[in-house]
Amino acid sequence: MSLSRWTRDLSEALGLDTDVDIVAVLDLARDAAHQVERPAAPLTTFLVGYAAAARGGSAADLAECMRIATELTETYVEN
Image (tube, rainbow, N blue to C red; front, side, top):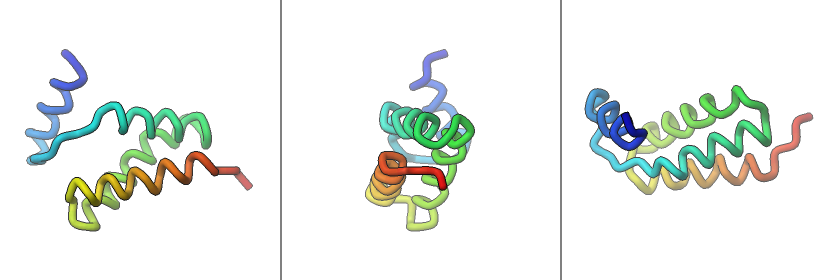
C-alpha cells in the first residue's frame, strides 16, 4: 500500500476532509527526530495536528502550526 493511499484511507476513516502535505509532515518529523531526539518525531506531528485542530482546523491553521514547529526545530538547543 502506498503512503498516499494510507493517508487518504486513514483520513477517511477518521472523518477528515483535508489534503495532507505528506512531504511537509515527514520533513517536520525528520527535523524533530534529528534536532531533538527520535521520539520527538511522532510527538511533534501529533501536537501540531492537535494545535491546528484547536485553532479551528483550517489549512491555514495547520500551516501556521507547522511553521511554528519547524522554526522551533531549527533553533532548538536542549538545556
